[in-house]
Every structure is written in C-alpha cells, then in structure tokens.
Image (tube, rainbow, N blue to C red; front, side, top):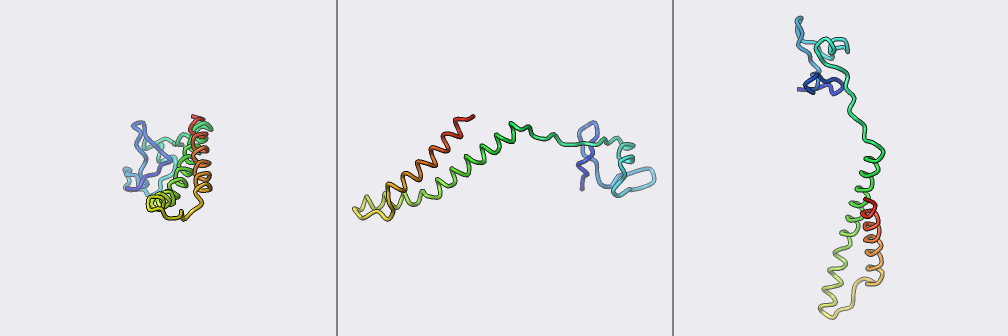
Length: 113
C-alpha cells in the first residue's frame, strides 16, 4: 500500500493515498477529506544545526578513514619488500607522511566530539 507521508492520525499512522469512504474509494483525497478521516497534516522534524554539523563531522571522519584504508595495500607491499630485502616500490617517507596527515585530521575531528 502507498502512503501519503504528509498526513498522520493520532496513532502515528500515515494516511493512505486511497481512502475508503462511505461513497467508495477516493484516490488522492483532498486535505479536507484527510482531516474528515482523522488524518492531520504532518511535517517531519528537521534536524538541528548541531545535528547537521555532527552528521557532517562523522561523514568527514568516514571519508578520511576510507582514504587511509585505500593506501593500506601500499604499506603491505612495502612490508613484503622489506621482508625480502627488496627495494621499496614506494617512497616510504612520503607514504608515511601522507597517511600520518590523514590520521592527524581524523584525530582532530574525533577530538571535537
């Protein structure tokens, strides 16, 4: 069943797009019909500025963690080469600096909580 999420009754149920009335079914009823059937206009609560800021902070943390994990294979490859006494395929200092910068950003954002 499809619901009109712009209307709710006192039990918290959303209004259907097809109302059963004494005269039969009404598709896409008018606001007056919804109110007569016990449904009142409903607007979902909007997140506060603080909630939006927290969601953005969490999204930034997840994005940075994803960037960090995307370079894990480089660290593994460097470790394998070092274990076999082969030259590192990447500049280890630059790789470490790049990953440390990401970790520092993550720590800073996590410290804001």
